[in-house]
Image 1 (cartoon, each protein chain N blue to C red):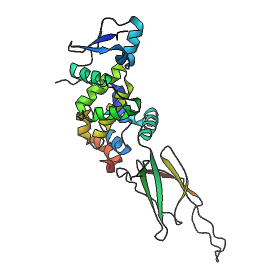
Image 2: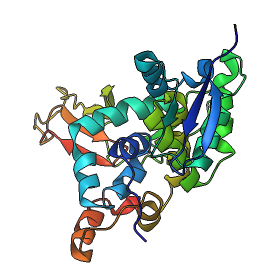
Image 3: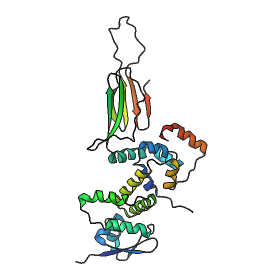
Image 4: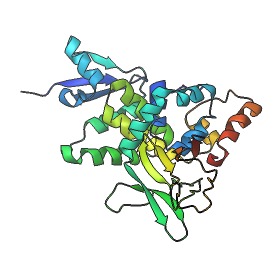
Length: 148
Length: 146
């Protein structure tokens, strides 16, 4: 039996409100979906539609003694519920106690790992740490990039 | 002044009456009425009678504006089957009834968000046009999402 195809507009509307993890699977559905999902136009639409429907906060907790940082996503509702569907894995280790959060834009987080060059170092050796490692991190799709 | 009634005709030629002031929540119908007064029957060749009955039920709702959001959500929730929701969304798209279309799409998205690849294809009537090798390459890129 031949099935009626759904109008593109409907498909785009439905996809634009799916969570990122579902979309990563949807890339495989067919060739034209992959093209759609890769397009800048769709990404902007998703950013707008999904966030409008699911206003959320991205929050860092810091375990100071263990020097561990944890990132979680909470819904912007009265109960401030944890978004259990979005599990954030933090893929990096800071040379300091934690990274410095420089900012966050359109779901991409910018972190820096400042290395305070210690002038009191007795032997005056310069250790091979790079200054100011900058990291761009997209937690929704677990991708990261570094400036080195 | 008596209320004017419009007649809508579904794909399977069933006729439905609805008061004009309710029908014009559909932008498509509103434009038709403006253009030619729409005194005759308005044909909706892509909407079947079951779906049209649902759309009419929605248009006939008597809701205070502040309860409307909840109403439309509940309305689509009660029709929780994906094929029905897609028909409804498609009709709402054709008729340009934005709230109904958004709510139906939202419900579909909510139902399919944890579906496997095959289930998504089946639900949204898409044919796989990739070889298993091509599929694997794309899958490996984000293996954790599967």
